[in-house]
Image (cartoon, rainbow over all chains, first blue to last red; front, side):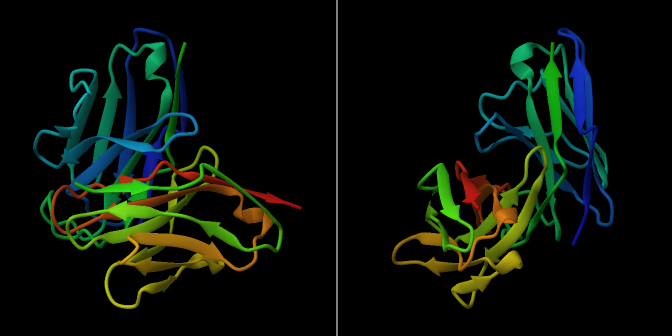
Length: 123
Length: 114
């Protein structure tokens, strides 16, 4: 199957600093990628939809100035947690779906491939 | 809008016993349904999916699930649990309308006792 690579797998940073997480589709082009956040023992909550060449679409309650998303190419999306605080500590996971069509709709049956996740700890 | 409910946040079975993880969904349009498995500190791996056609879907590692429209369910089963099956399992729903991100259930942690 398709491979999505996420880096770094773990990062510890000081409060107030910024952290960048990369998500790459290694063997396919992804016009749309998704960023999720997962709290301990909880499900994945969609944070935003990253669209190549355009602005990301954020879910309600997610601060776009806090979580900066850039999708500069068809194989790379980045999530930057700015001015991180301890409450931002979490597991962040990206995903992409093969057979990308429009960001909404068509292709709902296609499988989503996930990165390995990034464990962010803010101290 | 779509939603997924997974009954039972924790399920414990003995090695060799039947595994049954429950998933019910809500969708106003024909749904596509997925089961993913997550091992600690890792991403998600697809076990199986239902799109159209046969309602009994077979996946990897001996898992299967049956789509029952009348019950709005997509329960995951495995006849005989193995120690390596211990993990977190997520049911998810999608469709050809609306946003393309998957909507996940809250997850079920499967423990397998020796």
